[in-house]
Length: 118
Image (cartoon, rainbow, N blue to C red; front, side, top):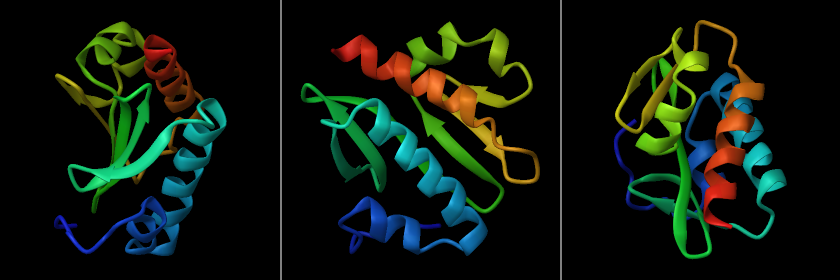
């Protein structure tokens, strides 16, 4: 998906995807909201962004072949062992859509990101 500057909310962002991808994105959104109910939810860098105490905690996004989670480089380093089966780069984790999405791992990483900012 290209960056759509008309999208103002995370719900609008999620609605632009096929239903199967929407389900995944909604589950990630709900997980982050559960972990940080007071986090500011917004579109930043064209993707869903969650801010805690004024700082970016975690971002995620949908793509044709994967879900991207952007917890930052410290978090990717912290979870290296659990991420060995996934494509990662400095602050990015890619979860392929043709494999089960590891929601428990996403929750652990998001919790780590949020707790670092509390």
